[in-house]
Image 1 (cartoon, rainbow, N blue to C red):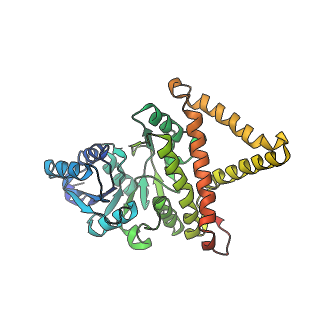
Image 2 (image 1 turned 180 degrees about the horizontal axis):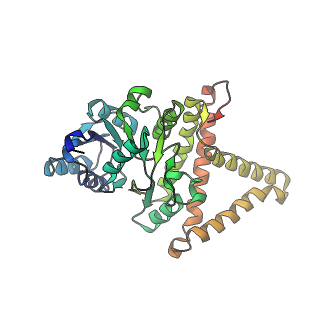
Image 3 (image 1 turned 60 degrees about the vertical axis):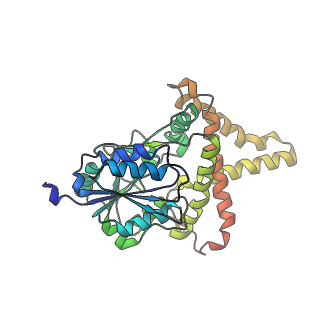
Length: 339
């Protein structure tokens, strides 16, 4: 297809304090094999206090095609930055990028090909999670395992092409935003999950394909991972409330698990009957087996994995329970239904 007939693509990159990663992600975007005259990149900076803006301006000055536009996002959050850039973007196709990511040279071209081939409203691929330190690599390993994240398709390396409920770094037809609106700025986390769920509920289709490849850099400490997953769990409650449905049953599992464990510990403290510790013992055993299996090829990471698995599960579960309490008054009288 002649270049002038190719869809115009806008890549939107909301960031804040991504000085450690911004150069890699931007270079991966400007070096796409898609015609650069049919591509633009919008960086929405959330008042960074590091050198993120300086690096963006440097790369923008070095590369004129595709153009890189920098705008200020005074609200700082990811959805606010995305929505600001979307108002200015000219693309027929909108790609949501992330500051902790890096994209294969054919990422944009494969997205465009598969949008046309599948007729989907959004396409994306599984992400390869990696880390720069031993702890970060262990976190990446856990996040790429079924035991760690409950089988989320876009995090699995062995995923097959097909329609799914959500993707990371999706490429959307511009008409999707005209039809269902923009990102929900109340959602500091899970805004992409809510948007994708909204799309599916409206009859839209999301296609996941392993030929669309990106890399995601995991958090580098257990503390930052805990904060990330606590917020994931907490804001998942608002997604359920806003959509009046449950995206997938796996989202409920950590909250139920934490509730059972805490209930068992409480009953043991009251009765001193060890049978009440069975849920904790069962989880400890499952965690141990998962650690040995997932870390079997990277034995140096084995000591980190039990703590990281527990962090993923307990942080998300406690966050979900806190969200239920925090936003208890916002539940519709109808019970959420599985879609």
